[in-house]
Length: 263
Image 1 (cartoon, rainbow, N blue to C red):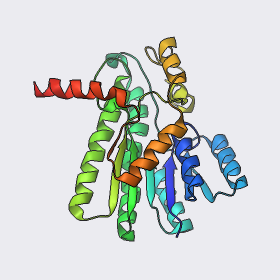
Image 2: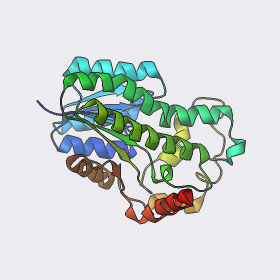
Image 3: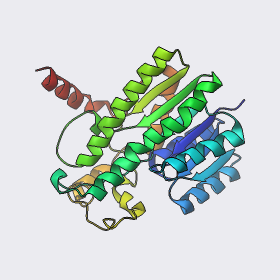
Image 4: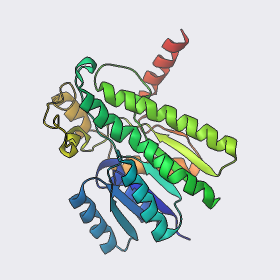
């Protein structure tokens, strides 16, 4: 049986990188994204190249959407072997200036999207009694501290803790599901413009400090390609690595934070 991989945030960025890598490995790939046009175009392109794919328009912040994604996937293929909870957004102001709408939007996608994915898929994956993998996309900002992108950092620290707990509990249960948490540095994606998918009254607010910062955009443009990140993810699954560090140069920041905590 072909492996079946489900990827959220599949139509662009890291998600698309993983889609293309997994399809190249001969996997069946289920594409989930909130943006219908890019999702449909990706599905069309992959099918034209002989890939077996299913596209499901999904708002990961909505539990019913993610449950629908699981239902459609299992109805079509009967199993899921790889789940990548990857969809993400960013919003940046001084943390005390963030509105309730800001918090709800970023946490809704970055954290609740992962929670919904776990709730919808893990019980089904457990019932398969097969080797499976779950990859939750966090960030190097989920392992360090610093100013800027406050809600994003909160959400990514939470995804790391959620992934750690999930991994430990699955080991305790004797499950064959392996968990991995992806903690990349700068990657060439469109996340700085993620407010394009925001529908609340704050959607046009300028996100100071991050998205309007030319230095930040320059760092993003010079970052790692999504294809390289996908290689790291694929290799980590093969070797059983939990913390996926795509940018080892940032490990010093993680160590400094840990030393501060121990002091």
